[in-house]
Image 1: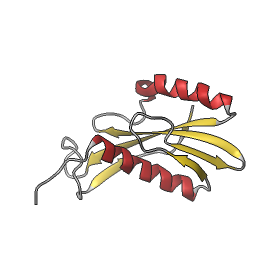
Image 2: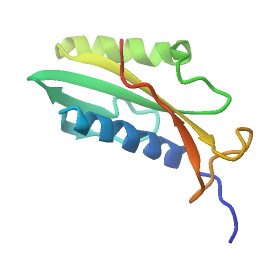
Image 3: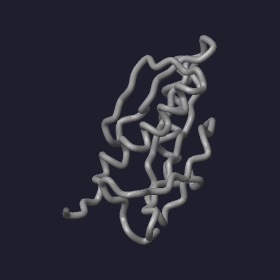
Image 4: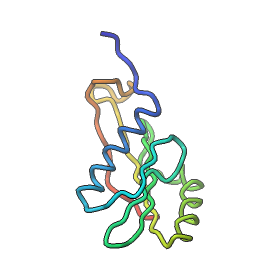
Amino acid sequence: MERRELTEQELHNLAMNIVGKQLEENGYEFLAVNSELKKNPQFVCTKDKKLSFIVVKSIEYPGDPRDKDFFMADLNKMKDHALKFEARTFYAAVGLVNASDYYLPVYLNEEYVVDYEGLIEI
């Protein structure tokens, strides 16, 4: 069987699934979900009657999911938008790397490692 790299959209969807699962486990209720690349936010949720906008990014090695400077322009724009709705804004960066060799891409149906430390409030 031929190896196939995950596309940018597939990596994004994988990151969204990881974050979405965590949000559910933490009692968030989904109002809207958007999986379109480069269209923010990915999740609009409520928890304890408080509205939250969550921006999800998949980061492939050697990128660092903790380096939010890379996305600050997007995040500041989202924060301004969220303020109009009295919503909190979160960034969820999900690092994804090939489990057998960090220098290879993530392949379909092969092991990968997740580097995700949870939501970062902006």
